Structure formats: structure tokens, C-alpha cells
Image (cartoon, rainbow, N blue to C red):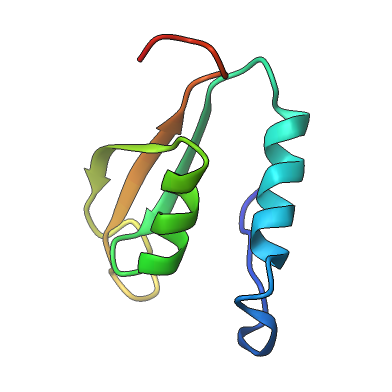
Length: 81
């Protein structure tokens, strides 16, 4: 999956959480990594709420804007951190 996005008109209705929950269910049993813009606070909060932790910074990750991204990781449920 390259991008999860929700039209701004429909944000805040749980659509992004549902998409993420479905993806995590599909990936159950495995570690999941993602990148998120450092200034995307709503997405960071969503990812943290389902167990992702920030493990690094990727400078100028987004080519078009030059924005930085955090790399986040979620271990399989039940694994020690």
C-alpha cells in the first residue's frame, strides 16, 4: 500500500481508522512499517493509537515538497517491544 488518504470533507468520521484496521488485520502476524509526514499530527495520533512507535526520521522523504517523514513500526500483537 503506498498511501492511505481520506478526502478532507470526510475526515474525522473514522474512515481512515477503518482502512488502517483492515490493513493491519490483513498483515496480522507480521511487523508493519510506515512513513508519515512529521507535520501530519492527526495521522501520527491515529498510528500511535494502534500501537505504532516512531523509530526514525527520513530527511526530505517526500520529493515534491522536500518534507521529512517519521518511520514508524508496529510489532505483531503480543510481541515484546
